[in-house]
Amino acid sequence: MTGRTVLTGPLRDLLAEYDGIAQTALGQPAATDMDFAALDPLLHHQLDTPGPDAPQTASVARLARHVLSVVAGVMRAPMHGWAGAVHGGPLAATVDMLAQVRARHPDLVVYLTRTGHGHVRQAVTTLGLPVQIVRHSTSGAMNLLHLTATLRRNARTTAPAMIVASVGTPATEAVDDVVEVRAATATHPAAVHVHADAPLAGWHRGLLDAEAATRARFDLIDGADSVVLAGQFLGTPRPSAILLHRAQLTFTNETHSDRRARGVDAAPSRLGTSVGTDGAAAVVQLWHAINVIGVDGHASRARRARALARYTLRRLQETKWSAWAHPDAVTVLLQPPSAALRQRWSMPVDDGWARIVCMPGRTEAHIDQFLAELARDQPPQQRATAPPGSSVDPGRPADARRAR
Image (tube, rainbow, N blue to C red; front, side, top):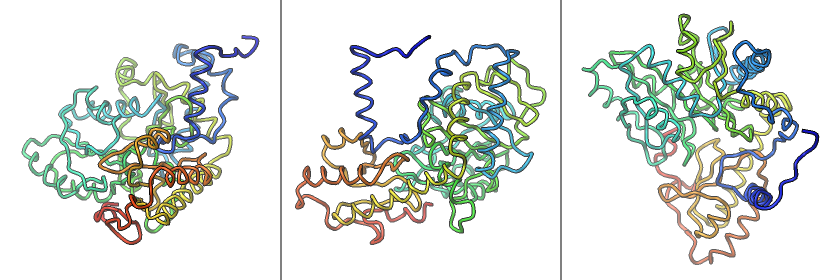
C-alpha cells in the first residue's frame, strides 16, 4: 500500500460511533490512553501465516520472550522456574493451560465460581471438562468453606482438581486469596492445580502491591501454579493475553501436533516461552505497549487508575449515592442510574449494582461529567440516602472485607 485508505460511507459512520463510545464507556474495562497507530503498517500483514521455519516466526518468538520475561518479573515468577505463552486473548490462553493440565491428569475436574470471567467457563466447555461450581459470597469472592466441603465430597473419586481463583471478578473485582485457596485444598487426596485468572486486576495489583503488607495474594510466589493476564489494561486494540505457569508443566516430549492441539504453534524455547497459533499480533502489541513507557510507566498508569477510583467513590458518597469498592480496586459499584444513563455510559448491572471501571485514560473530567448528568437525571429525593453496609464504603456488602 502506498497511502492510507480513507473510510467512507457506513464504515466512516461506524468509526465515528466507536470513537464516541470510547469517550463514555465508563463501565467497560478497556484502557484508552495508549497509542498503537505506529503498528498499523505491521498489523496490515497476516502475522500468523508464516511457517515455523520462517525468519518472521523467529523474530516474533524473540519479542514474545521479552514480553513474557517482563511480565514474569511483575508476577514474581521464580527465576528459571517458569514458562509461558502469548495468545490472541484470554480464552485461548486458558484453553492452553487447561489442555496442559489435562494432558497430565486426564481425569481433571475444574472448580470455579459463577462470578468469574466468562472465558474460563467457555474454555472448560471447549475442552469438555467436568465442572464443580463453588458458591460465592455477595461480594463475588469464592466461598472457601464450600470449596473445602465440595472437595471432601469428591475425595472418594481421587480426581485431580484445578481450582480457578479469580483475581478481579468482572462484576465487583473481588479477589480470591490464593494462599487461602491452597490451604482449603490441603486434604484433597489427588493432585491440585491452582490457576489465577487475573485478566485485568492482575496488572495493577502486580505493578503496585509487590511490597504491600496487605497485598492480594495471587501470583506464583503466593502459590498459584498458573496465571492469565489479558491486554485490556495495556489497551491493546486486538485481543491479547499472557499465560505464565510453573516450568514443570512444560512437556519435554511434546510433539508439534500436541502443541497445535492446545493452540500453541511454536515449540517452547530454552526459556520455556511460546507463541499461540493466533498470538503473533498479540506479541507485537504487547511488546509495543510494554516498551513505549516501560514497567515504571505502567505502574504510574495503575496508580492514576486507583486514584481515580478513590475519587469516584468519594464523589458518589458526597452526593449520597449508594456506592462501594473493594480495597485497591479500580472498579466502583454504585446504585444503578436510569436505563438511559446506563446505556449512554455503557454501564452494566449485575446483582443490583452498576459499575464504573476506572481504566487508564479515564479522568476526573469524565467522572464529573457523568455525575452532572446523574444529578440532572435523578431527582435528589429518589437517591439512596441511607445505604446499607459499612460507613467507610456505603452500600458495600457486609462480607466484602472478609472476602478479600
